[in-house]
Image (tube, rainbow, N blue to C red; front, top):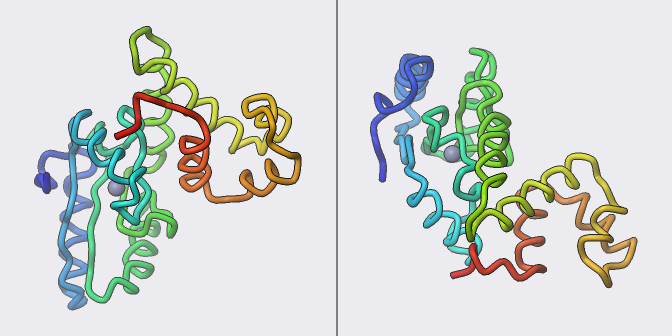
Length: 187
Ligand SMILES: [Zn+2]
């Protein structure tokens, strides 16, 4: 599913090519590993992530900036140099987060994708309630809403709720999904 950077939205193509060139010029042997993904590709990756097959965070289908052509993944050698590459990308105005160091996006792309995904979840259908729940989870995490989490998961203690809310979002999301039965997202 590699894809080409020329499948990305116009605004991102030139900057992506420039970042690959800059990393190459620095001797970092850049390799773009993912650009645009379809909904079903995202779903497959996400199930793999939940099953522990992938170390980097994966958004649920509908929620990834890759599905909207606004992000690409790139590895370099050595991988530690991703911090410098990410810093460069940020200096250029792009979005980058060390928690997902291979992921480079347009500014605000992940936030837009989460919004678009939650709008998908507002519809009906077998995936709608699960998608809605993950959106709710995002809101809890962003607001560190212990009371809301305790309502969502009866039996959770206050200190457990605090502990899980202090995790990075991706591990919180993974924890939540493993704690609640969500048939749509299980293998
Ligand atoms: Zn990515």
